[in-house]
Amino acid sequence: MNKKQFSIDCRSFFVILTVLFSSYANAQQTYIIDNKNHFWDKVQFGGGLGLGIGSGYTDISVMPSAIYNVNEIFAVGVGLQFGYLSSKNYYESYVYGGSLITLVNPIPEVQLSAELEQVRIDTRYESNINRPAFSDAYWNTALYLGAGYRTGNVTIGARYDVLYDPDKSLYGSGFMPFVRVYF
Image (tube, rainbow, N blue to C red; front, side):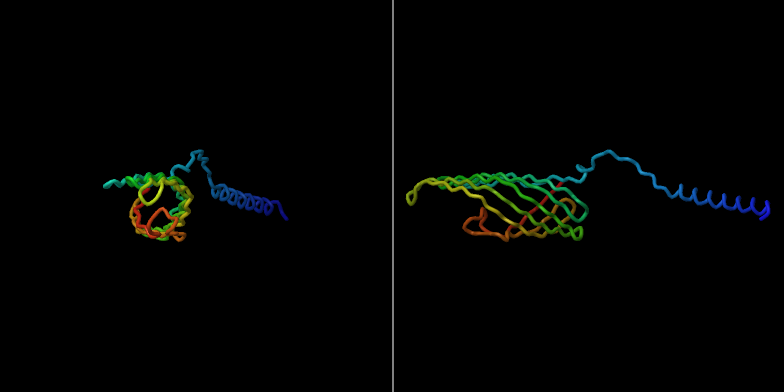
């Protein structure tokens, strides 16, 4: 191999190496370290308020909740429930507990939900001509499966308690319409 040929081969080899390493350097990704906590950016708060007042009847309820949007389709959350029901000269009841919430949006307009609710019901019945005064306290578990139409932060739909027991349930029916709002 002559000297001229070796010099051309070395230059060619050097050019090829330079091109390869410069391409490799350009292909490197630049990572920016983001120390911000994005958890709270995906949290939404909502819930319900209820007030029913009638002739000798009072129903007050507060049900705050929060969800974490895992992605655009799936969200999980928790809720609390506090309630007071009273019927004059008949009973007075306190309700408190919590729930676990799962929301699935297969398409933006449709929201499917599952909610496991556990509440404590403490009721004091007043005496009347037919019976003496007594108290009743128990835990009630409900598993609501529901579907609704969603527009923006508001969902209107219905849910059904698949564990509904007419003798123990807090509500008169297992079927329940709802309006759900999260901000």
